[in-house]
Length: 120
Image (cartoon, rainbow, N blue to C red; front, side, top):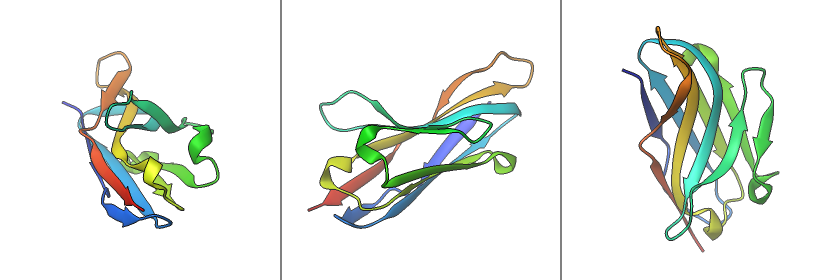
């Protein structure tokens, strides 16, 4: 059974920084795309950033220049460095990985979420 566990969420003042981590465990054969999504109260979940196996990245316009996604495929871990945080970044952040579990087709797995709160 594959599990994704996020960490790093916290309460921070506007202008501050946080680093989120998400580690995958289980019988994993290959990890394809990794990404971070977020969901604020009363809003739909949205993509924040993604990174493919080749290291190509994609960001939501609202976080470009402030957030950086990276991955350590050997450790099955994806990171999100968040700088210059704004109150609008307050949300539950979820990691998502598209991966191949042993003897199964590739599919998406989600973490349980970690709360990021930015105070003004």
